Amino acid sequence: MKRAIRLSGDVYSIASFSKEFGYPYTKVLSLYDQGYRDQELVDKLKSEQLVIDGKTFKSLLQASQYYGIPPTTFYRYAKKGKLKKLIKRKKLLDKYDLN
Image (cartoon, rainbow, N blue to C red; front, side, top):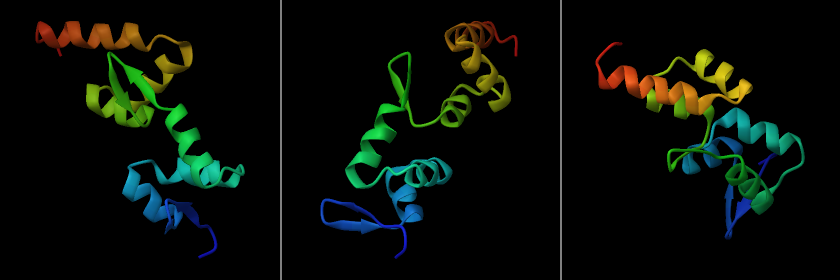
């Protein structure tokens, strides 16, 4: 196995690690290529998790799907630092069934 990730005595390929732990394959591959290995890779992935209203997401895409917001809109608001505003607006629209 060319790219191996070793955790607690188990060896994973990037694809099997991504599937087993629920992280996006491209994110794991990118961090691996940047030099993160084994437990260091897991720590980096956990540090980049997104917490919104007490709910933890492993990626912006996962959060956008959870809230039912198009990913491009979600990414744009995240880049501007206005995710809370977007989610508050979405909840308000859903509350009054205006979507």
